[in-house]
Image (cartoon, rainbow, N blue to C red; front, side, top):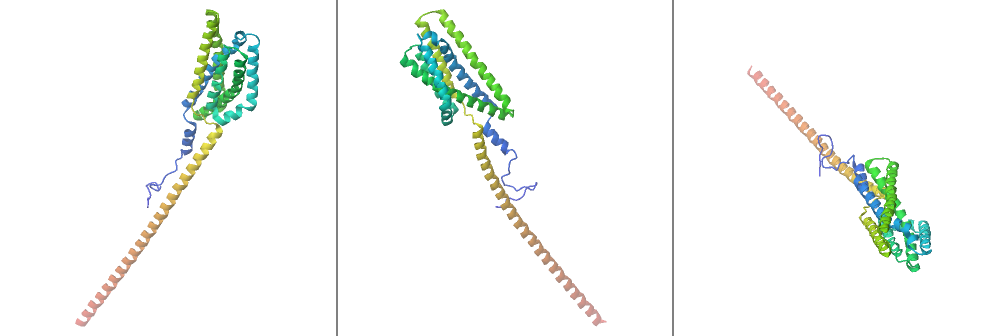
Length: 303
């Protein structure tokens, strides 16, 4: 079907190539800045709640747990933490993604928070080892997710990634240290108000609930794409746009071919009409000359 030409010389009905298509693809992948700030705020809130509970209990472990059991449990935590960082955290975070890893690892903190208030070797040591392994996963995923939030925000706002990465890390660790400060303050107030096992159990319940709330917060995190994922997505979008451009160019070529054929036919028709006109004029001229010759001959005969 002939699409024809518009007033600007373009083919009417063809799919034009948008000059802003690449920027639109970038926006589809990166998103709006608010989403990345929201995800960063939720992740920071989750870590704040989780370590509000854990850091406070960690400080009090050697005092709450009798004998050397508290010291040994913390030693197991950080030994498992070190091994997890080397062998477990990276593959786990890569396999399940930062969001899932943050939630799963944070849930593994909670059993230790309960075991501290009911101390025994059978309760503390396994939960301490589980916490240490999950700590490596948690911090690896946290670093990945924070970096993605920062870089995606920088690209959405067209800022330098280094500046936003430093700002995001500064805000995060400010609140992280504030959680330890406020946790210690709350724990001291509860223990000062009263003494005995009842106050310890109240303190444990409060800290456990705050840590659990922080863990649940990780379920609300949005998806943050890494640079590698964005490159793959942009490549796929680029292929789609390339196919669309090829199709558009194909439509333009067909339309131009059809239009060229129509112009050729029109020129041939005009030439044919001109030939017919010239032939008719020639015939009329000859007829006129014949008539004049006949009149001249008649006049000559009469004379």
